[in-house]
Image (cartoon, rainbow, N blue to C red; front, side, top):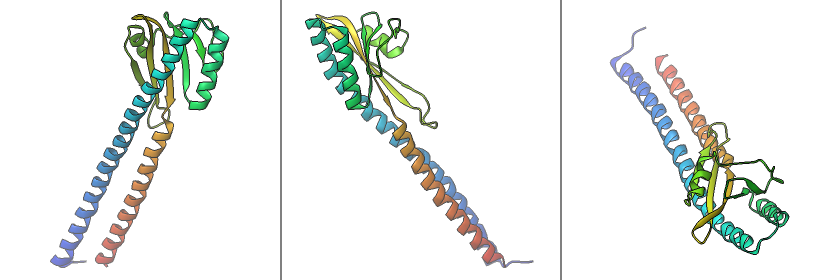
Length: 195
């Protein structure tokens, strides 16, 4: 079957436009989802540092007042429930003194964690763990507790960023749906012009 020059030109234009659109949608999707996640991670990092600074002040006061470990554990547990954060208070050797998820084991030592090592040196530390695609992304922040310029402990906070990863997946699904419809319309138009 022979086509006129006009039909061949129209078919070529439709194919080029469809391919260009599909590539553009994919690039926009990648850029948009990575920007959403990056902005979200930066906001959560700032939020956890601010929240942690308040907790550090309380822990410093508790150390000065020499409150018992049971009181500290209860405080951290209640605070973890009200903020939906995992919170740990560590001593100056990175041994867990209180954990919002339950009583700590006497042997729990967090000195091997990058963010805790930074805090033990007197600087705030953080790290991201897990996978964005699997929805297991988490943010770990550790802040030093200081008494007279000496690090006497660490407050570690953890936040699951799975909700943000789910938002990125929703964006991907919507853009994929648009891509499928556009491809389908392009194929229908191509079939219509051929026959």
